[in-house]
Length: 440
Image (cartoon, rainbow, N blue to C red; front, side, top):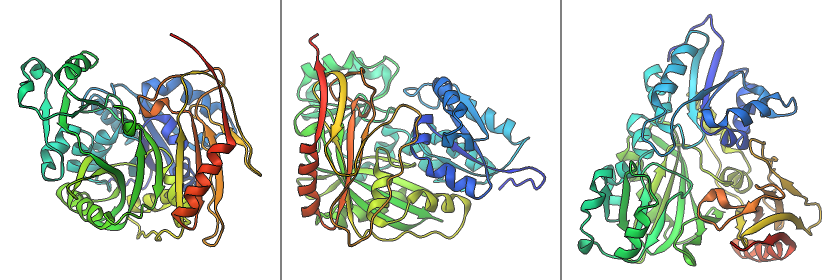
């Protein structure tokens, strides 16, 4: 570690600025340790980030400096040089003692700077492979569905007759389910190809029918200190997209043992060293787990708050301990928690209401901290904890093609899944989404 005793200790957080705001416990944890907080985020977030930092009530005032880097989300390694240049400058001002990628955007350059500075990280192989879907298929082929990598210059050379339908078509470097669709035949696939930029690498891969899961694993010094299965629901049940609609922590399916074993083998194959891994799986009808993708960063959506509801403690503080090299542990779940995203009719959002004692709707604008969702006691009855709206009144809502299109979500927890299922139906009935339907 490149520690300079005459300079203030600093920790670097990277990712989309709104993701850093959403996961504000990282900021509080570092501030409580009197560690200077530095943030690296894409240039596209500059305006909103600066507005947030000017708000004296915002937790973002804990950030000492923000660097805005150049790159494109759908172009490989495009942020690397800008991030490295930023760290070169900060090394003259601070003693960098840690770094962590909160969001997907800057995972790879975060791994590079951590390796160069001798900081704890998932490792170069893990951060590079986890950021690229085609490298995941190359490195982790024994865990993956059958897949064909389509480099940009190979699009006109695809031998469609050799492919087994249906297939999943996905871009190799995007995230949030952007561009991931199911195609049933050559005609659909050719029509879909024109919607991807000519420079993007794509994957055509076997569609695995089966339940979807994710696995969150805390790793320290190459050893898994906590791992748990999250049960997922997505839009693929009624459309050709794969937008996530619900997460349940912990999942309780009998296939959990096989899933956890497979996840452990994947982490070993990646030489994953320190941090949190978020892997996504489908359990096929052949009773085999298939790796959909893996990320070397904080899980998205509301999975972090769900673990706090289920286990009673926040993951963020444990992750910071790991990245600083402190002994870390995390308790097993004592409750079951769920986040649900409500589907909507396309139109203009007018209002959202919930008829539930003690619960009010929270309208969360971009770059605004999520309200803290505090856990209850293990013996508590079923509880609705929060209702969030991630769009603005008057904003036009579209069909769910990616995670960014979702608008309304709620968080619940209970002692068992049966209680949770009943509570979910009650909460769904208690929420009203007022939408003015439009016609194209």
